[in-house]
Length: 310
Image (cartoon, rainbow, N blue to C red; front, top):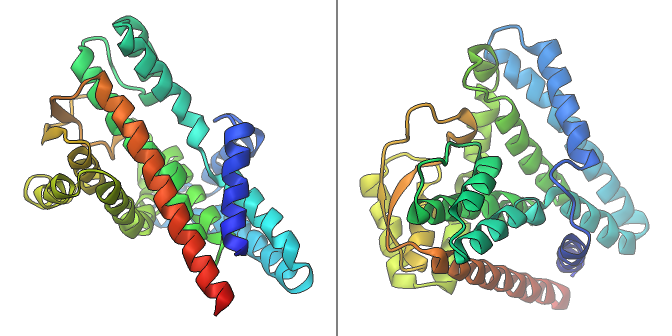
């Protein structure tokens, strides 16, 4: 029951008092990432392993220590501590305003505004995008963001290591992005260990998120999209989630090669050509995400009650 209420409190506070993408916690993490890179990046990929251990493990150990200390002394305070950690590691409102602004702009056919917001959010060239391409790209980035900022955090928080898992996941994901400047091969190699580690940390969560979208959306088309992923997208890291979500929304997507000059920050994006995607699809995606959120909260409540009774 403690886990359920911790997540519930975090969600309520995140909706009411959302942290910005440039909040003090992430500013500190950004400075720490830069300092660790400066001190440990000696040009060898193995340096990245040491840097990750120094940057992430102390945070996770500190989080776990407080959790277990409270658990054995003042159990009721565990709800507040764990809720605080989930609140700090969530990031739903850090990107949702971009998504909402693009959706509103496309509703009134203000393509220039939609292009500007999407470029600010995704750091890609949007000057030549038409309305369908803007909707498709927004949908893609929105699906990936909701997974990494919400559902992926939930998965790692629900593991036996509790809030330390949420810290491990979000810190690793953040560093994987910070240490991936494609124009700087020195730093790109330095971040190889963190990127590979995050790939394996996210392998199961991304599939559980995809399953959730299939359950709350069009299940048959979603599962067909999942199978379609193995046939057309090969080993793309995020394609299983995007293909399944597209099927759940009754949208057809086909793979397309990434445009030349795409930034490393968007390395995980698979850049798809859309068929039948419109501004209405963006609204449908919002509904699907909230249904998936409710689904997992109900399941968490049922598991918590069963554990409490048992």
